[in-house]
Image (cartoon, rainbow, N blue to C red; front, side):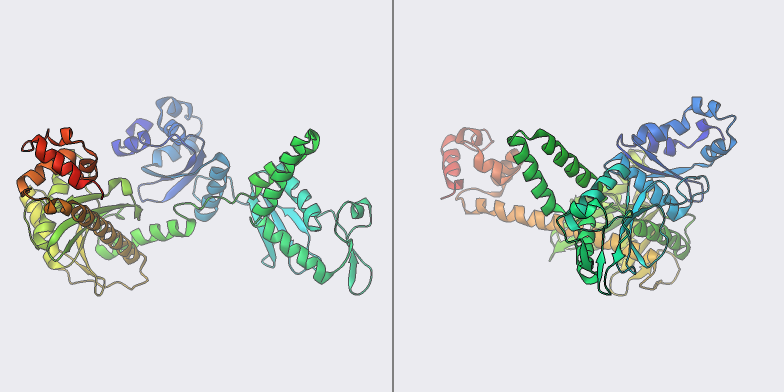
Length: 492
């Protein structure tokens, strides 16, 4: 397969990539991750794989050429910075060990700080490997130079030892930390008991673990004070320490998806494929839910999950238009028909799986919508809340998966999100209606003119801010009634 033979869907996905930093995951036709890479600019980096000029240049690199030919899908993880992308790339490669990755097989690229908890006087030592389970490790840290500056500052601040220290036992209970000039360069006592030193280590470990805001504030204050006294050399030294601490100790941002969740979602989709008898893992799933209060304010929600996680750009909400009253089945038929009529008109792909919040009645209503569209539905199931029972539209019996089933957990999150989204819309409508009900108290304002007002101003807040002249521009409103309504709407 040449680079030009990749699917239109994959090319469209590449064109839609963001310009920021991140990590990209290349997948084969079975959905397996075969390569993980990082990029300063995701769009430019990933697009370069599929350029004809690159294909010609790879004629003498069979491994890379084979990788590109195997790519049928991709996924990205956006981050805030290049160092963050570097860290995440390494974690994902260690996690999945993709076939075509050769780097990041160990921690060689990043420094760790090791603290041997079994030593009588633990030291803070730099290392590139996790050697045992008895020690405590901090990191990995991307900026090795800044990390070394931070540790040097910590030795002064907390009175702890680094790798170059060789403590000497003075008595059965006391130790001399340094026997050279360094003993005079710290405000801490140089002879300590093991218990006293442990207190220092605990404070330093807490600091290195990210709890350093108080000290940073103190350092910034001192830096500003030195600069105000024109002690610029000392101010510059403090500035460098502050910069080192900020960059080294800044915790890596919690990603929208951590590695455990990514692995769980991937497993869950594969389990759903098996449990539901699908031809492939359902990468795109949509769920419909109906919400109302005793037949009033009837609304519906549509939520979309991509790769097992919310894809909020594809959420939709619907106000029921075809009837007034309480009929969940009719409401479901309407919104499913509206959704897929739109997809057909825009020539967009259907989801891999539709989930209906409900049982056979709701499923029947959804199928009726497809009959009206003269269109075969994609795979469709219902999820009944009481026992988390999966209902099929065909002759298959209902299915109850174990509650710890990763695939069922995805369906539950999807259903709960649809329920939340529908209820939020319902609450918004009720709140708006309550605010608009003040118009009912204005004498002589019937439903026709009330609807005309709201259609013109779109909200009560805009109507309240309107001048009498602006109100009188609405058909049916003369100057007198416009002035009276304007005065009526003003807060007393």
